[in-house]
Amino acid sequence: MILMLSEKSCGAIIYLKNGSERLYLLLKYTSGHWDFVKGNIETDEAEKETVVRELREETGIIDASFVGNFREKIEYFYRRRQGEDVHKEVFFYIMKTCTENITLSFEHVDSIWLNYTQAIEKLTFKNAKDLLKKANLFLNKLEK
Ligand code: ATP
Image (tube, rainbow, N blue to C red; front, side, top):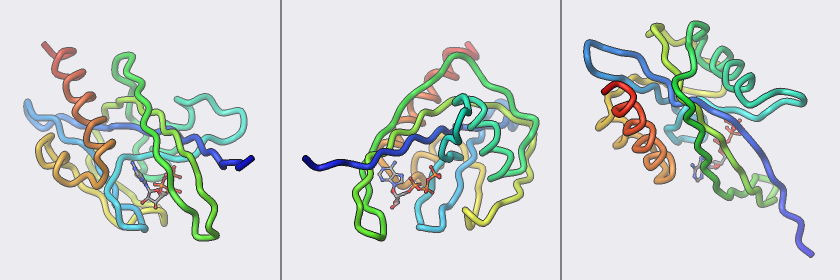
């Protein structure tokens, strides 16, 4: 039997309002991809606690609040440098902030606020683009 390692992370599609436009925050990971804020769940943490902690650690944002009951999963497989294959699940929530200035941690090399169209272009992975599409539709409905 082949045992597959599994990892669970939680993250946030975080946005701020610039006039009537929503700007989404993307981070550039040291491995090169552009993605949302996310990180591994620590022992005994609830998903939303992970999201709030990761947001603070990775961006310095402390004023954000959860929006609606959005919770969506993406999953993928990747190979660690040591050669092990990992099945990873990431659960995403939507959060809104008024903080524009980002303080990056060592885990990222860049950050950017982009409108929907620009963010779809910038995101590296197809499943992240699909996730943003869902989140944007969710927010369009909520703001109607
Ligand atoms: P975390 O932010 O959860 O602590 P991490 O920074 O350790 O995670 P990931 O961002 O999951 O790691 O990246 C690990 C590997 O998976 C990298 O090689 C990356 O290219 C790949 N990867 C990241 N996101 C996706 C995705 N949405 N689809 C496919 N592969 C991905």
